[in-house]
Length: 463
Image 1 (cartoon, one colour):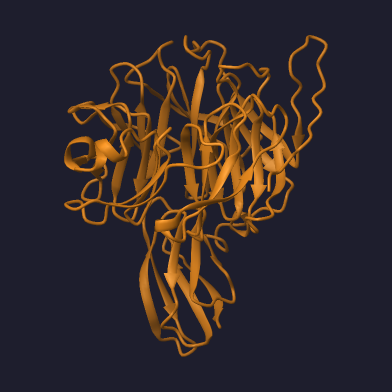
Image 2 (cartoon, rainbow, N blue to C red):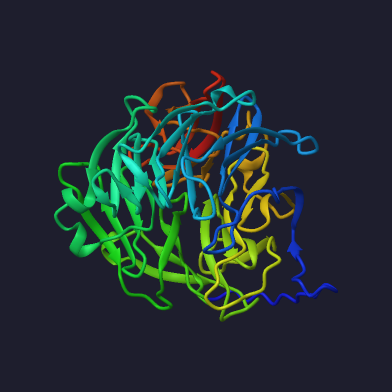
């Protein structure tokens, strides 16, 4: 099933593309005309990220100059909280990428003589000092992802101190501002170069890595034993196959969305319940321009799939039924028209702020902050009630817990009706699937302790 959304675009008097939207309203926008654009794609801006602490929310966006951090807690009085100059700056910069771990922001770029920068965000809104800026390990990187359970940083593409990089792993668990080299997959994993090769982007949960490997497809790799890394599944041939650019795992862990960065390609919804039989079960697309539209980056939050499209803006699809996906909303951030061979417009999205604000970046237009009017996931409500969401409820064999505000692992406990603790563990960022096979039928309480010490609990039923 393919979603076909017929969108009529009106032309402004000066013949630029009109901005259209559905169920999304613009709350704030920022750009700086004094910043230079890249010579390759005319983009001044790139990746967007978010951060929350002590009730304050921040938007983070990259540019050719560096990293810009905004306090968006009061959307009517947005403050430029801090600017971090890039190690490499100027018109040669196209890509920056971000992730957060233990109140630190990790920053990379994929052009020039760059570095890994680490900024301490715990001092915001006053400052965000750079506590590490070094290219002894990482010179350039196209994308990074941190598996917060293991405390491992994965860096895709670019270059390290060992030369060109397909995928490398660094440990942050002992000290988040002193990364330690673990492995370079080119050199240290025997099957890597011949079977997988270059990894463009990656999603990792509990040491299981979903590797978006460009034209080679999708590979699932088990890093739980770094001395014996195992390839456990792959999808190397599928309909509408292009350049597998990026992907994200659904909170249930049952399916994965991937974006082929090619003109006219749909987003693929992939069943990953059986790594030995990974299959595409649905596609998501629309006909703004079927031959020229390009999906770029995408993120699951609950059942909502947020997709950044070059030229066309941000689209949100509900995937509660992966065989009957529906459109939730969209906002066209770009004034550029579709052109073959061009990569312009919306770059990325960040939907995890507790307030429900949605962040997006546009390569030419800068930072966007949106409010939404479509039914959003319940974790978008107030923090003290919705530090996590647990589903399904009632549950049978397992329950999945999705978190929205944690930048590091958080302990949980499950109690029976007598107040006895029957299971303990650690929640990872975004989602954790918990096995309930050994539980008797009945009522249980799922409890976590937030970073501020507050205990949050939810009841659920085991059938």
